[in-house]
Image (cartoon, rainbow, N blue to C red; front, side, top):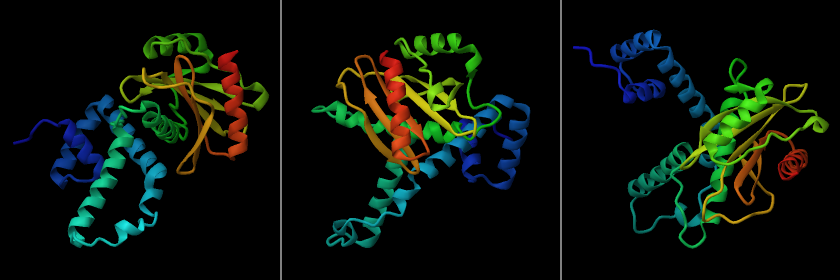
Length: 251
């Protein structure tokens, strides 16, 4: 008896966890369902991006206190460590970031940097479909994403930095949609702007910097929105672009 292909089958297919017979059934299903095949390609891209951004954590040395478990057995400690790593990946992929009752701003700031970096890592390598709406339809793009995000958006001009607008797309936020814009220069280098509505418990912030793997991120929050600019370049170069973008948004 052949069971219908489920969402769990698709994820297991991506993770290489199906036996030969079931894998072949999923392959046949994907051949007949292009939309599902596209989703599977997105799953693969997200997995690749998560490894690119977060694998460095697995190579970091353990804190001294964790490296010398006393009362707990080695197996119990290893299980807890594995669970912690799993929670890190789950939080990055699904956005289940905890909200601090004392200072929600502190709890959410790293999350936007992580989400922006993952989106950057997923979509900037794409040649055939890096965006949903191209830059030639900029007015439609901005109007569409503004309606989905719930706040008016802008696409700053970066001509003086040598970048043109490639286009944009809608991407998942923690609890609501986010806007994602992509820029490119003549050499093919790409930077991205991630924007979402400001949370009720977020404060305005100055420009801040974070590294997510080899991706640099500058991020800030204004009166209505939170932003993150991502790129694989020197900190100083990315900071100049982030300041141009911020000035374009505020101007």
